[in-house]
Amino acid sequence: MRLVLALSALLASSLALPATGWAHADAGRAESAPPRLARLDVPRQLRVVSYYPADAGWTRMWEPWRPARLAADLGRLRSLNANTVRVVVSPAAFGYPEPEPRHVGRLGEFVSLAAAQGLHVQLTLFDWWGDYRDVAGSKRWAAALLGAYIGDPRIAFVELRNELDPRDAAALAWARELVPWTRALLRGRTPVTLSVAARDPLGDLRALRAGLPGASRPDFFDAHYFTGGGEAASDLFRRLRDVVAPTPLWIGELGYPTSTTLSGYAGVPLTPSAQEAAQAHYLRLCFAASRRLGLAAPGIWILDDFAPGALPASDVSSREPEYTFGIFRSDGSPKRAAATVRRLFGGQHELGFNGGFESAVLAADGRPLPAAWSAVDLTGLELARDAAVARTGSASARLSAAAGAAGAGTLEIAPVPGVAAAGRRAEAVAWIRGRLGAGQVRLAVEWFDGAGRRVGRDSTLVTQLPATGWRRYTVAARRPGVASFARVSVGATAFTGVVWVDDVGFAWR
Image (cartoon, rainbow, N blue to C red; front, top):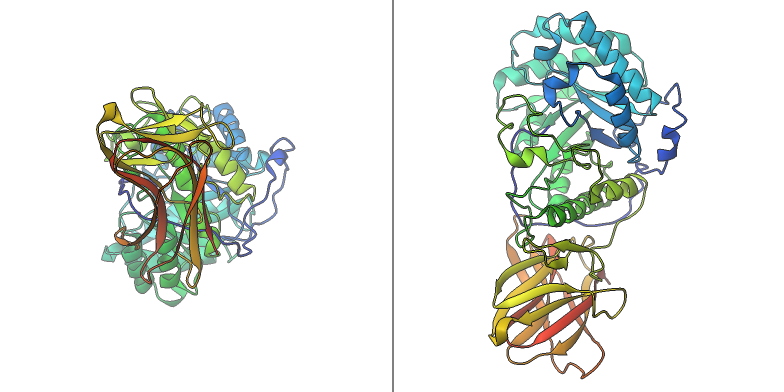
């Protein structure tokens, strides 16, 4: 789960369609509440959303106990086409090394509530705990919680420890003992995993694999990802997958905060509507990366935003972004991402990136802007979504010099299918109309490596716009060998005119 935010703002993903079997449109089954669940093929079939009540995060979930509230929330979670809910158990909340019977009972009731909604449970143990030298106590505690679920298909898998620190020798020694012991306790019927945090997932996963040889390795490895705008996902997920091969990899947590204090995308306003659109774009990029690499659908952090005061005192409770990762707001109303996740978990392939500027968000001053697009380094240049001018649909993007002065700046986005494809040619297209005046306007494809450094640029100069109507411009290019992803941009320098842009596209030929 989230312990530290690491938001940068550069990097990209892709889309291809290896058969993983992880997406199915079956949310309607939530109403029929099947009494028994078929065992999942883990991690291949996972569609997971992490859960705490919006007003009771972490240890506060269990006291007071509100089964009616939990059941209603699980119904919303199921409506996302999820098939598994992640629940986290802390020794501090349940009692250690002997969990209190009432908490053991509440966990059992939660598992039953989830099953009634057609949901399996990802059971995460030993949260907010670090007494790794107490192996005997660890086994007593885990056995008391897991004993009732041996062979129970309602438990999709057990995450033995959330975000284990593989540089902690005691933690590694504990994992070497507990992983095979837990697998034996569950008679090999329920998979066991460990996760690493999002700060340095590649380094941590490499260290974890090296520290868990042979039979002490989990059934699959779990890495968390929260960085930037998701453009880096494909490059990083590939590296993570290759580090642990042939053991499977699952991205068990990813998320984007709809924060008003920071953004994963430079040039996207810090307004709720703009950041909610950015969150949906981030998820499309990350899911496309997983699909392209043959990985299971990534796990979502988290169902709801947290209400003020919902988090116990901790290293995260004072950080505004930590309250805003939800797919729903704290009042239960859906963000844009709810529909996006429902489609992605339902098997749809989300290639779009608002290239027709049909979707709008609001700037801090209330102006309508194109959703998900970044406005970078605007100086004397005004950007707006113009609902009065469109080639197709209902709107376009307008770039105009402010008050007659020469302006400069860039409108850009990482398209969902923009991960660099070896041996193929990229083509960006945009339709443009207007008055050029002085200066230059260019349509460009910019190339970036996995660290977000620009490693190439191909562009075409916009010239000879017709007096009426639209003109089509294209950029065709092959990626530099070190490029990981592309961005499409329309940029102006020393510009005194006004242009409208519509129907921007990106494809591989």
